[in-house]
Structures are given as C-alpha cells and as structure tokens.
Length: 440
Image (cartoon, rainbow, N blue to C red; front, side, top):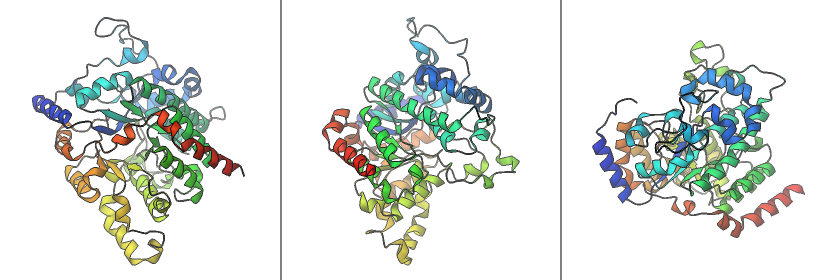
C-alpha cells in the first residue's frame, strides 16, 4: 500500500461530520470482480462461453485491473478471525477496511471491490448510507455485444466459433441476476444498477420488469440508440412511461459510446492504439480520452430537443460526472433555442430548464467545475459520487466532502422503494397493456 497523502486524523474528523449530516447516497461506484471469480459469481455457463475472451482480457488489461485466470496461490483459506472463508469472494477480498485502504488502493485489490457483502462495512467507514454500484462485468458485456471493434479492444481473434455479441448479452443477463441477489443480501445498501440493453422495445420492457421484480432501484442503459432507435423516438415512449410508473431513475455512464465514435478517428494512428494501459472500465486510447462523455451529452441533447421530457415530464435521469461538457456548452445550446425556430418548436421551456431538472453526480477532478455545476443545476440536483474502487485523488475528495452539507440525500424516496411497492403500483398493469399494444 502506498503512503497516504493527507492527514488521516483530519479525514476521520470529516467522516464523523458527514455521518452527523444524516443519510447520504453515493450514486457512482463500481464492482471489480476478477476473472477467476466469474464462474462463482455469474455462473459456470457464461464463464465457459467467454473463456477465450477472458484469457485475452487478462493479457490485454493485466492482473491489476481484471485479475488472473486462476485464483492466486496466496489466497487465504481463513478470514481475519481464523474462520474458514466462504467462497472465492471472501478469500480474495481481505484487505482491512480503513480510510487509507479505501482511498489508496484501487481495482480488484481495493476493499469491497470484489465481495459485495463487505460493502456495508465500507460504507459505514465512509459515512455513506447507501450506494449505487455500476456493474463492470455487464459493462464489458455491453462492449462485446455492441462494439464492432471488440476483438481489437479485448485482444481476442475473431472466430466463427465465438459469437462475441451473444457472449456480451449473456454477460449482461448473468450480471442482472447476480445484481438482484447482492442488493438483497446487503439489505439494499449496495444497490447494483440493473442494465437494460435489448434489441426491441418489447424486450426492453420485459427486461425492465424482470429487473424490478429482482429489486432493482435504478436502470442503466447504454448511451447509444436504445433498441436501435433515437432516444427521442416515440416508439420508446412505452419504456420511458414504464420507468416513470415504476419510479426508478434511468442512468447513463461513460464507457458505452460504441455507437457514436467511428473507428476512422483512430485507425492507423499508433498513438491511439489500445494496449494494456487502457482502463477496464472503458478501453481508452488518447482520442477517446478527449471525448469520453460525448455520447452521454449526445443522448441528453437528443432527448431534450426531441421533446421526450415534454411527453414524460416525471422521467428521472441521472447523468455522470457533472454532465460532462453540458455546463460549459449551455450558452451555445441556449443560443440555438433562442435563435432558430427549429430548436424550440418542440419545447415549452428553454433547454436550461430541462438541464436543471436532471441529476448529476460529483465525480470529477476539478473543484471549480463542481462549484460551477452546483451553481448552474442547483445543489438539490448534484448528487454525491465516489467512483470507488476507481480512486479519486484523496486531496480532491477532501475538498469535495467540504461541500457535502449542500449535497444531501435527494434520492431518499427512490431508496425507500421495495419490490412490494412496485407490485402495488400501476406498473404491472401498464407493462401488460404496453405489451398487448406492441402485439397488435
């Protein structure tokens, strides 16, 4: 472990102060289950299906990001109290949960990165009540299912015997099943975000219902055309309506820009090549480093100018990392609305009004940018995010935490939802009526 870079006494005092503020929700964190645990976590069948890809990933990304193919020989058979460990997760995830280990370690070695049953203890140390967890295994699945360049990104050879798109879809389905189980086992404190990415609107609705029945409280869709449609397409209205009826927010996140970025931008440029220095969260080369949030902004702009929020005013959306470039481009977006009739004919209010309706997380690396977002969107719409176990700089984290009195639990109502509430709502009736309509 590297030496800590701040006075831990000061950090402990800040955590105590945070706990005194009341429940705080972290809306941006991740799991980083290593390759050798895929079978135990997500099932033997899907692990076997992606075995050639897993071997390539281990070589491309390295053990520090995705783990090894086999469990390390050093893994202990007993926990810190001397009791036998229960499965690979408890054997692998043994780093003591302390502030210094939380912020100085990253990837699969970070405490709570692998064993979700340890997340509640980690949240207690951090002074956080509940946490939304983005599933890394499903993110890898989305890349495999959607990205033409997946063989280059992951480092495997294309083969007629290996359908990487089908493998990716199987990974998403397996993670969704695991997500519901982990959310229940942590009493809802570590809430794994469910992924809805299907080929038709009907399939999206069916997947949404399955996820809600499993206890999902938030839905992640890739920032690419859902079911092959523009986010503003009226055929997607049934899906947006279902999310409103279920009272679950829809989240976007970086790393799902495969439908937006053309390979022509990076082909033939050695400096842009993928290699082991890329991140497992989103395989990245220098070109994509400059526009990693672009697909989320594009998605958001399409929804606003396409009138989605006119038709679905209660739809909740959470956008990552302060909304990317959105705060800085607001003047240009607003100018287009004021100057060109085509940009305002579908809207009953200026674009800035819609931006102030959405939610954004605090994950960033620039405190002045955070202050700008707070001023532009309102403190009640900027939600706390840690990005663990992808480490934020600990000094920056301290600065961000100083703003926390303004960033309290604005999604408390969302957290209170239970599967029974979903069952008692009109969601089931709406879902079946939508399916009947699609069958006409």
